[in-house]
Length: 220
Image: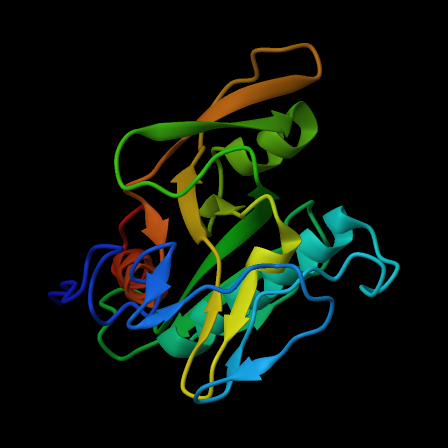
């Protein structure tokens, strides 16, 4: 099965976030107002919600956004999401049912989901991410029926830049990237730095490609 990208780059005209400064003829407004305003064809402005945002830790908000982002990708890819039971220290099991799989009808992967604002989106090179050794050992387990992937969401530092909406699109920034850490050994006493390739950006097409590979006996 051949899967190819029609719009591979961040500056694609089909990508509503064509640049960080401008979307079509509409420019991002400043963040001086407290509450969202609507201008033009129902464009929700980026705003500063300090003092108005709910009293929830930023780390908890990051977890909610990464779950929502993965859920959106899974929905577009026609995949099922479920929580591992019992919980082995992983966040999600993703299932993809297709008659085009040559080995199993429903292919599955387990995912450890993390997020960071310590790097920015890119399409070249790698970025470093630090894992607790216990979590790494879970992801690196060599004897597995389903592959386990680390998926890291890269977020803007400003919470107000996470989500943008309009009447015909909504943007969740920035992107998710995946890596298979099977067999990876720990290197620190409590934590280990791992490298995540920018080229392994997770979107609906990439998720379908991975699961068709798994469904045909391959390993991502």
